[in-house]
Image (cartoon, rainbow, N blue to C red; front, top):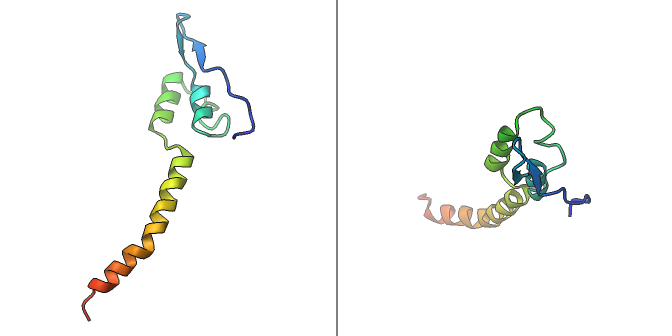
Length: 83
């Protein structure tokens, strides 16, 4: 979908323990490479930003659903308006 291969999902931490890669999370969210991880911040800040972020595909789906409901919302408000 993104036109680039998936990065490794696991990286080695500071004590050589396996941990989830922020680059992989960024890729899974469909973000451009380096969108978050290209900023010089600690991994914890990258993971926090990614965890608090919105997956673009979900946002688009929500906006499409909202746009489909908009005419119905306006129609109902017109019916309830007093002259």
